Image 1 (cartoon, rainbow, N blue to C red):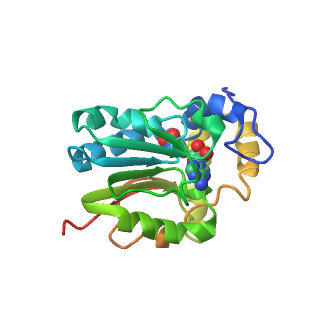
Image 2 (cartoon, rainbow, N blue to C red):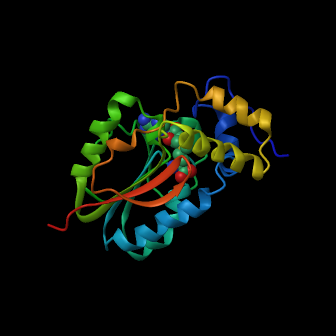
Length: 222
Ligand SMILES: C[S@@+](CC[C@H](N)C(=O)[O-])C[C@H]1O[C@@H](n2cnc3c(N)ncnc32)[C@H](O)[C@@H]1O
């Protein structure tokens, strides 16, 4: 049984202990984490042009930047990682440039490729729809916005089965039942799954495991 993290009673990323164990903890919690990261890198190769502008929004320790690194170098792209927690930023190992700022109020330039990987569920609910609209408006023609997030489940038994899949998968990779339970309760009020109807109709699903979905929102070419 693994245990990598002291779970705070009220979840926060503004914690040295959480930041220190984040990379291991996220892989114990989400067994598909590296698979979905690879998919983001794949789309990056398709949508980052030469001299392009790229954002990693809610960058944590730099997972997405590291996955995109080869493409960023090859295309001589300008990369910005946005992360609000100083404690996470201190552990950042992705490519420059890291900006410590609130992603919602940050002043983005128009971009070719932006990634929100497991961050929207932590943003205040009343900011999400307008934030998504703003990002959509900032996507350059031919560019794309990628989102991977936890979503609200459908009502009824099927929703129960989806939620239990998440629990089952955590146990399968060795997370301790006690840790799973304490983390779930710790997240109350801070992690709130996304309403999938918030996504524009043009968003295409490229990934789904139970409650977690990945979408690509490609901008029109003209
Ligand atoms: C689950 S982690 C994201 C994982 C990361 N994208 C990865 O690929 O490993 C969520 C991150 O979003 C950050 N975050 C939450 N709210 C934010 C905000 N308003 N602005 C910027 N970052 C935020 C948290 O501090 C945390 O580092």
